[in-house]
Structure formats: structure tokens, C-alpha cells
Length: 228
Ligand code: NAD
Image (tube, helix red, strand yellow):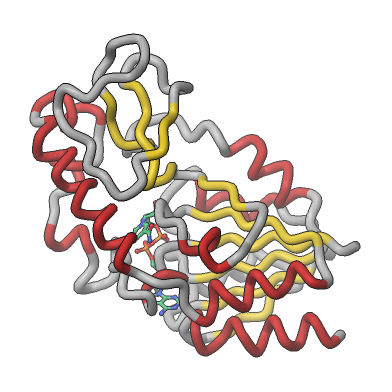
């Protein structure tokens, strides 16, 4: 069975109504990264940071998977599919994708501030000050903040290095180390990039650029791959 790795960014969830970060109208125009998405911000003003992510969680709960998420889960009929997402939402899972690796964490989960390996489902609740892990330390969102290590990078590199087909969707490829992942794909692996404002990436061999939104570009691509 051929192995497909799908690498997604905020753009895959844009048509589900979840804002991207860097586009105009994106989240970082409304919020200062340094005030809500760094360990220092959490130390300085934990209420503000928890409030920001509690709001993000509500938005995700209200959103639905779109045509792109759904088409990607169909790929599993014929391929060994691994999704690597920079997104913290759970729309790939809710669309039916079985193997989803979250590089930057998951908004539906909380982790201990002292023991990050202690991770809990938050479901539709809020994380509040005073909510503790089983060892008595404050809970925080299970999110990789700017300036923190990306613990899932190693397994992600392994997946990309060994794929036959790489599909990149809706990412500005500006946030490192995640953006560097595409460079690990083998030269002869077929690569697709679906993004209405796709970067050129002249150094990537065997690349086809589909300059469309995820909802418009992904379903026909999946149909083509399933019929080949
Ligand atoms: P980004 O905001 O930097 O880039 C978004 C990309 O999506 C751009 O290239 C843009 O052209 C493209 N895009 C916009 N609308 C699209 C559409 N309808 N279909 C396809 N592509 C579209 O986001 P990024 O590259 O993912 O990186 C920034 C960080 O933002 C990541 O760390 C990610 O964790 C985080 N983020 C996550 C979510 C989420 O969980 N849904 C939402 C916003 C940001």
C-alpha cells in the first residue's frame, strides 16, 4: 500500500470558519502573540492566556469539518494515510481520519504545567485557574507555544522521509521548525501543494501546485489519486 503524508496548516480549516493566523483578518492581527502564546505570557497573565484558548476551544467545537477534511479521510480506502497537522483543532479526526499527528498540540486537551506528559481531555469545558493535574500542578492548554520544543517533530520527519506522496495544504510555510518538514520528502516522491496563495518552492522536485482553496482543490485531487 502506498504511503501518503498530508501536511496541513490553518488554511485547511479556514472554510470551516476557523481563522488562519497570518492572513489578513487572521488571529494575529487581533491578538499579540507575545501576550497569549508564549510560556512567558502564561507566567505573567495566566487568566488572559487561558481565556484566549478557552475561546479558541469554543470556536472549534462550533465548527464542522469541510469538504477537504472529508475527502482526505476517503484517501484511506486505498492508501496508508498519515496526516501531520499544525492545527490544534480536531477537524481531521471528526472527518474520520485515523492517523493524525498534531505538531503544535490539541486545543481539546490540557496538560500539567509541571509534568507535560500528563495530558487530559477537556471536552467542551474551560480550563480554569486552580484546576490541577493529579500531582497537584496547574493545568494549561496542551499547545506548543512559541519558543517551546516541538516534541512530535522527530516522528513527523520519519513519516515525511518515507512517504510516496506528500500533499501540503493551507500552510504559509513560515512557522519553523514545522515548515522545514517538506524538505525531508524523497526527490522522487510526488508532491502537491494546495493553497490559493501558494509559495513557489523551486527547490522541491516533482511538485505540482494547485492554486485553489482546500475545499475546491482537495476533493478533485483525492478523486484523481483514488482512480489512478
Ligand atoms: P498561516 O496562517 O501562517 O497560513 C495559512 C495559509 O493558508 C496561507 O498560506 C493561506 O494562503 C492559506 N489559506 C487561506 N485560506 C485557505 C483556504 N481556504 N484553503 C487553503 N489554504 C488557505 O498558518 P500555518 O501555516 O498553519 O501556520 C501558523 C500556525 O497557526 C500554526 O502553528 C498553526 O498551529 C496555527 N493555527 C492553527 C489553527 C487551527 O488549529 N485551525 C488556526 C490558526 C492557526
